[in-house]
Length: 79
Image (tube, rainbow, N blue to C red; front, side):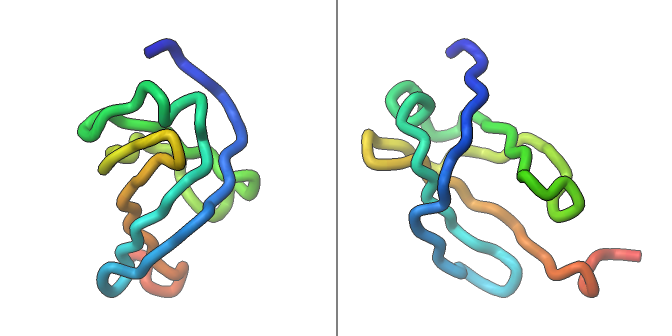
């Protein structure tokens, strides 16, 4: 798949365990070709919140792109 740069909305999120969330992103251009095990890079609008890094795709279908994302509050970051 060629690189695609787009804005994606979070359409659903579920906390799987402490600091681990499952997110569903509305990204149809990516979801139609994505397969579990591939990666996407996320770049938030507020760059202070998350470093851009590859995130594994857990699944995809025309309704959305499913990813698992570890999330920590800033006070819980390793020192």
